[in-house]
Image (cartoon, rainbow, N blue to C red; front, side, top):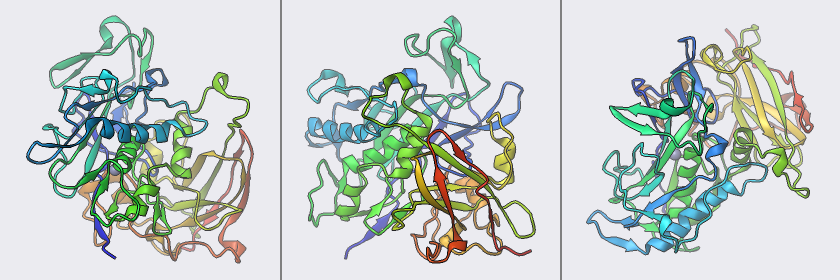
Length: 443
Ligand SMILES: [Zn+2]
């Protein structure tokens, strides 16, 4: 089989307002974050989210559509628009999330824009003609979140103006009415740029195709996840069914690409966690309920274990884990911006569908928890420093994320041995807490 694995997607490029040294940070887990001062001048990590008042999010395709390296358009722009719209709708359709995108159709003039570059201009553009920071080499596309960095400010009148590199933009009073608090991490613009010189794009990848083609809808679904705040994931199972936010895809691997056009359960949970449906909007026949699982992982010597991978399996289907998270490192716990005291080794799954779950811990590299499971060389440096860390062999060097190149394998628990997992019941609106683990790490 021609399986040509390449780095096709780039981590969402996190571009900072109010220049913060272009540092990228992440808490162990699953979303895009920034590093910002709080109101007391203390630097912390913040999650990057849209205000729900910004919904529905409007986006426009550059009017040239798919352009090759000679500047020639080779796919009808309306067909491209439809493929990208399906990508946004895949996220919009996640049940129990309030995220929405503008409902236009491909014949509407507002679907297209003359703007060809990504940038902080309050226009959410999708382009093959970017000159600001276009993807090159094997990178297929990039997603940009333009998120506010700085102490929280209350918006009104003049303070609705935000500066970047000498340019000033004015946030709209419609989305950001007076007295809106602009928290660090608030996303205010998103853009997506595709590589015009490398892959052969297809607007509808045909099953059984043996062409080396890249499916626009698949790539756009992945990038749209970044635009809404998701980082990369290491959830990749059973060969042809990786998570949408896994950062590679194989050229010509049609089934795998098609399977990634819809978010997986872990990604849906993330969307529900950050953009939960408002209770007023609940439809009677749509049961939207979720709970949480939390606990702490310690080593046998009673030291907390940071950076440990935690999986939750639906107890009725142990073919692959449903949710993934990581325990907080000491640094994560110290700089987190939540109001709660967080401790090293703690983890939380939220946005979990009620039901029975098997919860287990795994180390970095999908092995069995053992010595040095939170050794910085195996995990933490990757988390903290992303591309700055010299990652050996099979690790990707994407930024702002926890990502394990190894596919599911030896780390999965043996469900015949009940000491390797905890059976947990998750109830609507409740936290199943104190689901604690001890690694068999030794000093
Ligand atoms: Zn990506």
